[in-house]
Length: 76
Image (cartoon, rainbow, N blue to C red; front, top):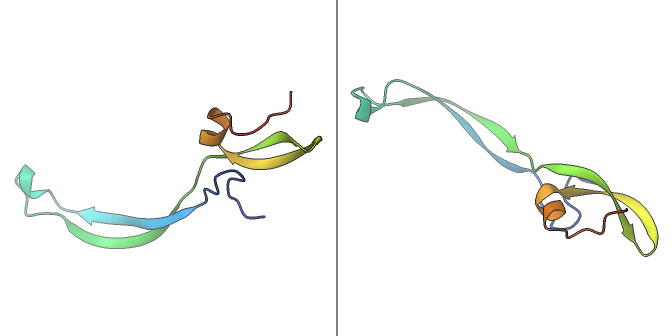
């Protein structure tokens, strides 16, 4: 099972971490130069919660947005 929200399907998104050096032009410098680009992951805030479905309890991964919006039937 991949680490994704069971309700909305939210999962990790990939992006870049850009490293810069130098002072910005608007601050009186010569401008910023990019010295490195590294790949990184933006992870969703997933929580493992107990839910009730078809009369049985099971644990699923749900993002906090879905938990706050009450989209899951939490076990009492």
